[in-house]
Amino acid sequence: MSAGYVSQPNRCLLFRQDKEGNENRSNYAGEIEVQGAGLFPAALWGRKDKHGKTYLSLRLTKKEPGQQSDDRR
Image (tube, rainbow, N blue to C red):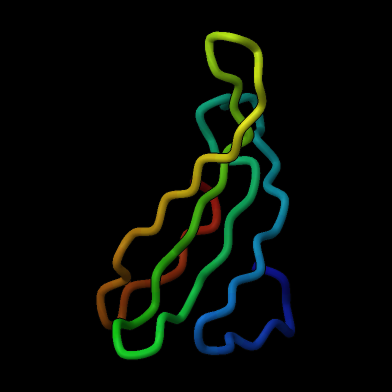
């Protein structure tokens, strides 16, 4: 995650990730704090469907209390 970023409830900033030769790694990663539900690591992939149309795929996972952030998904 980018240094100096302060999480705000119900907002998310996603930062471009270096895939380092791993094409399964997400293109972007960050965290979102959902009001009343906690902190969720977020990962975003740019994908193409079988017809060649581009779409975005987003995954949120529940962050357990005390768990360290892992931006390298």
